[in-house]
Length: 84
Image (cartoon, rainbow, N blue to C red):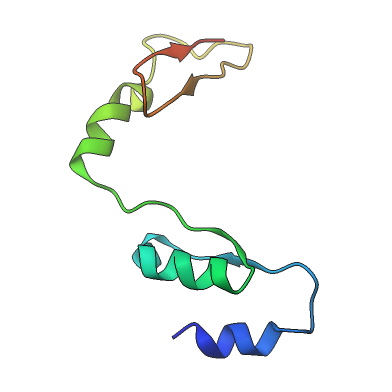
């Protein structure tokens, strides 16, 4: 399915980027793109383990929204977040 797209751009552009939705996520697609020198952005498909581990990030704080911007950082390896 990706062969025609890759062949269309091969040799015509110097930087190759591919963006897709989670429906195309899979090891075979990643390998195909990497073998042809593409950089890519493909989100992981949702799964219960991932959703459970990041669920606390989806909850809004109670009360009025703050004036300043809050930035949260999280890692899937730990359940910590750095607020503000």
